[in-house]
Length: 147
Image 1 (cartoon, one colour):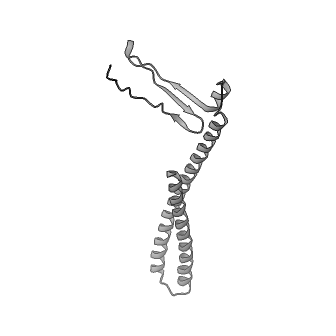
Image 2 (image 1 turned 30 degrees about the vertical axis):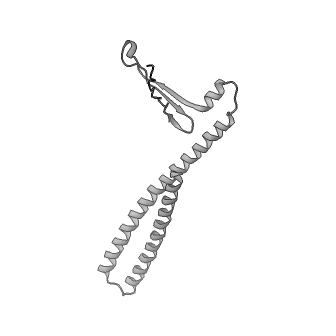
Image 3 (image 1 turned 180 degrees about the vertical axis):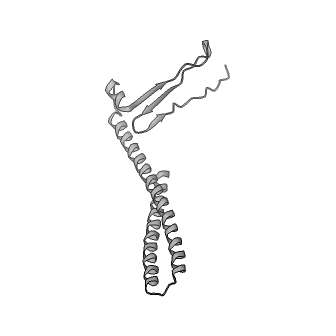
């Protein structure tokens, strides 16, 4: 839901900036025509043209960045949908097969062991298809009164 709200905000900003770029195009044409027919002095024309072009360049950079962000958000939403479709495909399984595991898991990274003896630990990273790195939830053990 958060990504949907962000994507709407970004989409609105892209549309607003594209509209302004179009307005600037029209203004540049107008000042050019005014300069050609002598209604606008050359020095003022150059100053206004520079300002309009600078604003256009800045807006085009923002539009480019926002468009890339939109593509990332949309891609992320598509990946979530694909993953949920995969989960639904296997929601009533009775046996886990290697083919099923291969559909879910992109890669598993096993790091060098750390520590010695009973304190020895090995970090394992699991990357799921469409989702990325899966963080295994760590349950905190709460001692009972008997412990």
